[in-house]
Amino acid sequence: MDVQAVKTQSLARYKEERDWFALLAEAAKQMPTSEGELQVKLLEILLDSKQTVVDCVENDKPFIGGYFCNAPELFHAMDLPWFMLMETPFLAASAPYLLNDIEGAEEMGMGTDLCTAIRLPIYYIENGLMPVPTALLGLLYPCDGAPMLHQVIEHNKVWKDVPIYACDPPYTSDERAVQYFAEELSRMVEFLEKHTGKTLDVDRLKQVCEESNRTYSLWQDYNELRRSVPSPHGWAIGGAQAFAISQCFVAGDPRCSAWFEQLCKCAEERVAAGKGASDQEGWKEKIRLFWFDIMPYGWIFEYMPWLESEWGATIVMDMFGNFPYTLIDTSSRETMLHDLAKRNLLDAPMIRQARGTAENFSNDIRRIVTDYKIDCVIWPGHMGHKDGSATIGIMRDTCRELGVPFLHIGLDLFDKRYTSIDEVKDKTSDFFRGMGLA
Image (cartoon, rainbow, N blue to C red):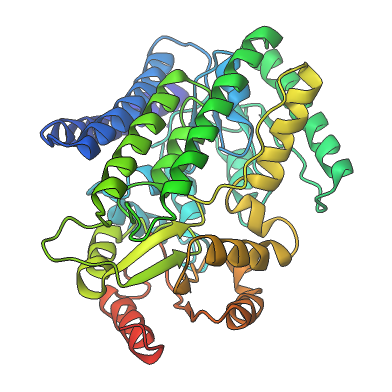
């Protein structure tokens, strides 16, 4: 398949995803509630991001493929559209074709022991189902599986000539490490300027970073509201969406801050009314849960509503809703790169936990359990998160010290065939009963 054929085919799939979210946006517009308005704002940002990439492909404008942990404020300041290489498994989990894509990856011969979030982009690249960017940012962290994408790209006929740069992450978390990563981000900017023709203006970066600070400050305000008993929101609103809005589309855009303002408004209304996460008549919050990982995107709608309705369990906090973020000192180019380096090396979810030492897992558990009055911690044990699997004993011991029950399940967050929904529900139910939480 030649470059033009791949370009046409990949755009067709990307438009299909865009249209799927457009359908969801229309449905959200029919919800006459504050939460409905919130979903519309989110989907409009997402749709605009996807349409911008479509426009770049159709009109030969520069755009890049990258990741949330590569300081996306820099992309926005450079007026450089981008999409996340692992976008579909996370954003399009509700799309009807996702399971077929997983099966297609298996038919290619990829083992099911490789993280599904990595298998799927490999499948898309090899089958011409992903837009070919002007330049590409690689990922060397937090796990060893991510660089496998680089190997596929280097051998793919269409992608092999796409220039690629990957920031080198130090293992330590001290000031020297932050300074080193800031230099890596600076080299990344030089790479993007060379291959896209876009330039980084310091005044524009300052404007973007100041808006990003406003977004993150509102996020912190929201997370303070989630401490309330009952917590105003659970799995359906909050953590994963907040992460996507702040880091996956147009980081540092006023629309992101406006979304968080609406999010805070929704939470404030529910706290004032004494409402919990569910609007089900007679529902009460009985279990305050910390879900310590990514949400189960492949089967989220089959499990999470069941948690709430069957057990009165509220996911008060999750790994991607966690807020340990650094606000950015905008006084100079150097201070902005320094604080962006810290935010993306030490603060960003999953990167924060898995890149460094095991204490990152245990310390986050201690803080969240204490701050949010958590009754139990679930580590779902995604088959691709082998780094976290090595710390299960430490996480369990930490929870034992805190006096909260800990559950490790063992599953695939994207492929519901790996561990069946019924089995996950049975393990959860047995856990709640056995720990006296029922």
